[in-house]
Structures are given as C-alpha cells and as structure tokens.
Length: 599
Image 1 (tube, rainbow, N blue to C red):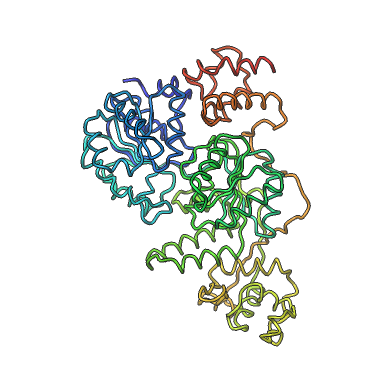
Image 2: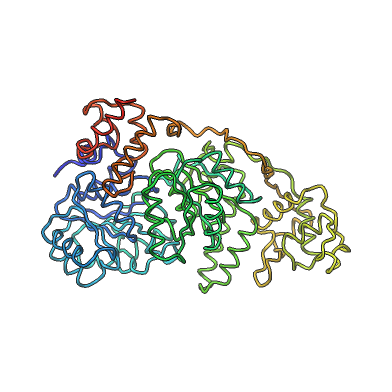
C-alpha cells in the first residue's frame, strides 16, 4: 500500500496535510467509518481521494450535482488518477463503457448521483465490484431541517446494510448540532468517528452595509475592490437576478444571470462560462452554488438577506476556496426582514418547521446587527469558541460606535402605538419627521403626539432605529397586512423607562467614489497590470481551452502566484511548487518555465 504522504506529494503536489486531513485519511485507509465536518476549501476531497488511491478497489463517491462530478473527475484525470462519473449527462453508450470499466477494475474513483446509486440495477453492479470505500459528499443533504434537503439521501443507509464491510465517509461543510445528529442517524454512522474542523475561513473578509441605493453601493464595491475578478452576487428573487445582471452589463461588467426559471440550456451555458472564463460575475438565486468548485471566486455579494446562518455561511464559503483573499459583502435592510418573514409565514411548512426557521432568521439578524467581531458571532453559532478580534471583518477593522438609544426607541415605539400599530416604517418615519404626506393627512396622524418630535434624527437614522428594534424583537412585523409594525411584550419595559438599549451608529454612505484603504493581508494576487502575471494566466487559459477544462483544473491561482514569486527555471525547481505533482510536472512545466524565462 502506498503511504498517504507519498500520494499527497507525488500525485497532488503538496508537501503537508492540513488540519485533520491526515487523521481522517489514516482512519479511512484502516477501513473505519468517519463523519467529517470541514469548511469549504478545507480539503475535504483529499480525505477520500487519497484513501481511494491507497486502498484496493474502486471508491464510489455519492455527489448531488453534475457540475461537481465533472470538475472533480477532470481534476483527477489531470493528476493521473483513473476516475469517471455516471449521471444523466451521459449517453447510454458512454454510460455502458463506464460500467464496464468499473466491473473490470479500471477505475480508482467513480462519482455517481444518489438517484442512480439507489437503483436495483446499479446496486447489483456494485455487488460484482471490488469496492475500496463509499464517500457521501454534501452529507447535510440528508437533513430535512437543512437548506439543501435531497430526499434520495435519506435512503443511503442501504449502503451500510448491503455492504457492511466497506468503510464509509460522510462529508459536509455546514452542519449544526441537529443536522449532525440527523446525518448520523439516517446514514447509520453511530459508530463512525467524528472529525470536526474549525469552521473558520480566515481569508474571507465579512462586511455588512445598510441598504441605501443598493445598486450604486454594489457598483462602488466592485469598482474599488474587484474590477477584474470573478464573483457571485446572490439575490432573493428571479426578477431581481435578471434586472441586476442586465444593469451590471449596462455598466460594463461581464455579468450573467442564473436561476431555476431559466431553461436548462441557458443555465448550463452561463455556469460553464463562469467556470471556464476569467473575470465573469454570476448573478443568481440560491439555486446556484452547491458543488461549484471554482477556487478563485474573489467575492460573494448578497443584495438580499439570506434565510439562515447556515445558508449565509455556505454561500459566502464559495469565495476564496484557494486560500487567497476573498470578500463576503452583504447589503441589508428592514425590507429584507419583512420579505423573509412573509415568505416563511405563508409557506406550507408545518408549525414546528416554521419555528425553527424563525429562530435561524433571528440568529442571522443578530449577526447583522452585532457590534462585536462577526467571525466570533458566526463561529459561536456553530458551537465553536473563537476569541475576538479577527481583524478581518468590518467591525474589527472599523469598530462601530454605539449610542444610548433609550429616548429614540421610546419615540419610535410610541409612534407605532399611537398610529394604531397598522403602518410600516416609511409612514412612521414621516410622522416622526412631521411630513404632511397624503397618507399622514388622510389618517390625521398630524394630530398624534409623536408628529414631528423626531427632528433630532435623519430619515436614514430613523430607518436604522426601526431596523434594529425589529432585529431586537422589540417590534414585530404583522404579515397579515402590509408589513405593519406591532409592539411586543419585550418592548414594554423599555417604553416604561425600566430598560435601555444601545444602537449601532450606522456609518453614512459616502456618495463619491473612494478607493478601498483596508489592507487585504499578505495573500494578495499580483496586480492586474503585471505583465508577467497576465502571461502566466494567459498560458493557463490556452492550455485549459485546448483540453476543454476550466483554467483552475490546470493550476489554481495560488500555484500561479507561487510560480510568479519563485520563478522556477528547472524541473527540480518547478516540482517544489505547491500543487505540482509528477503528472502536472510532465505536462506543464516546460510551458510555464518558458514564460518565466521570458520575463
């Protein structure tokens, strides 16, 4: 049996394991079951790929998405590992050839969709095959309480029942305690060893801005920090996806839409361009993302609030998978809360599920409003102790001042009460600022005691105050009407003056363009106008196009960055570059050393 360390070095081109990788790999090579929780970009795939190479037989990898299978198989073929996939994208003749290779023992890894795996024909095929292990990727799909439930995953316990001697490994990047328990129960992993890595993604910078002309805020963010980078922009609705993509294109950005309402052909075309071209921005609903292996996504932006911390963590985790700097940027306002709570209350889920989703949304609101280190709040949610400051989130880099909001909160709550608890934020702010609007006059709210008492604060400040009162559960949104605000029991002590409240002092949005002054750490890529760097990227793109694979399948940005830094001119120097194994050394060293010599 080839030692795991030797496989890591000669096949994959890395000198050392990260975190729990070595322990997981040794455990699986020994034929034992494992449950692995490891953040996106943490190296989960190596945890089953190396044991698959080391053990006799074929490893069967259960994967929910076609794009993920294609990417991982392409990457394995690049490093000289015999791999294939079986899914609906293959014609019958190609699928038959893959099955024959499986029976003949010619495959080290076979990726398969859960739907195909569960057919009696395929299970019979496996009984005729020498099996190395089963890997169940994206294992959180088994949880009915999760955000990516796949009903086929529930049936995967059959693997343990029909193949009890074959080791199994279940892997996921996002699983809170209830989801973890459900994975163990449904997959029959009660005797499996659990490997739980840190959820921290230190290369990602988390930042939240309050919505004030969101498109212009997004445009400034892209222009100042990501002028030529690939990224993902998430929106809540299909309409908003298409409008945003169209608006970005009009502004000169290379932006493409992606949502479930588009035809399958358009979705595949846009996803393929995002994966295989440089600098493409995808604007998407949450229908996009799981299984996207593109490592050089430099930013993930949310124009609407996600539904939970789990969803937010997973979506932002698609940035910076190569370990280099990435931005997680979220624009958030009270309208998001109204929309999400209305969607939740009108859904067909049972009351138990709704209560769970409300708690998850409340946790995300707390994260958005916190003045503490965001990374600390996020990791605490996943039951991981983290000592602030992280120095890579907005609250650490630009600490938020707070102010005693007792009087302002009493005015805001009183205004909601005295206008009958039947109106939304806009109307309440108009009353507080003494604006004689048509609606204010129609309901004679210029006669209530709170009319015009709020001139000490601007309209933006009042909107911020109401947003924070809702997030603190001092006001609730009535979903039976038009988002009117109602007082909760929790607000009474504050109204009576028995409690106080501290508000975030939201920074005013600067209208003029300003360059980002925040340091991005020491893992920055070379500047876009660096001719040597562009030549390396161009050569990578040429090689990728020749083979019909994404550029990162040839080399990650981090590998190109190291070539740019160390400038290897001999094979002995080139093989020392991280990510260069024996197969890639033979295939690509000469092509890239020629670029190094030229510059």
